[in-house]
Image 1 (cartoon, rainbow, N blue to C red):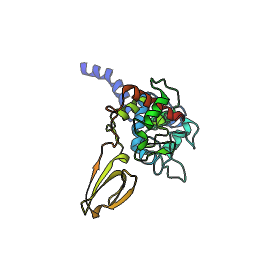
Image 2: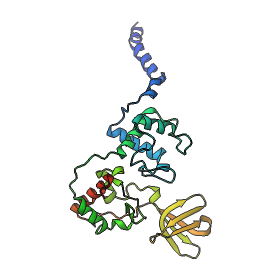
Image 3: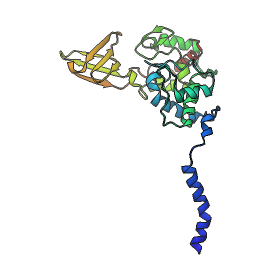
Image 4: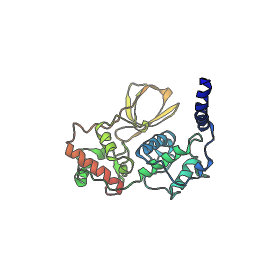
Length: 268
């Protein structure tokens, strides 16, 4: 009698749980035009999903890749979150944009939309540094322009920073400067190639497949190799950029961050 009574009490809760687990998703969820997944956590999750599924074409930070356009300066084919959701979900007809994995939930797609919106957030941020001084550090003591291009001027051995503030917030920029080896994209790995005659060519890994590889050396010369025709090759996954910890003072780092942040507003 006691067991029967306990089951009578517990049964409704068990059945409700089973229903929640097995019931199909409400189809109206796909018809919503409002993004309710826009918290900082949602944006971080959207960034992770973007890098996994979209970064190959659009670049890990959305700044453009070999196939996809730069997404840090607006969207050519969508003017609303709902329109952007549709493109991320379904892709664009007659283009190479095929859309996100069919296994992705609507919530995941909205998180990606939130991340994309964050790349285009141009709200002013109060920073302690001085933009003009930071520009001087960038082109002078910091020696940044040797490897990085801004508005068409500078080197090509590092990422183009013309709109870096659209892709990286101030905390991420500090991390990039102080701990550059923390998160290095494969696009910026180095290849060290030892040829059959023993000479070594080392530089940025510009391309690699099963049989071939391309390298850009420190003088920005491009080299192509067949993997079967070299003695050996090694991938160096550390950043070619040195940490600024032993190079710049705290005030100079603050100034440099202020300058890099200003580039998202086109002030550089």
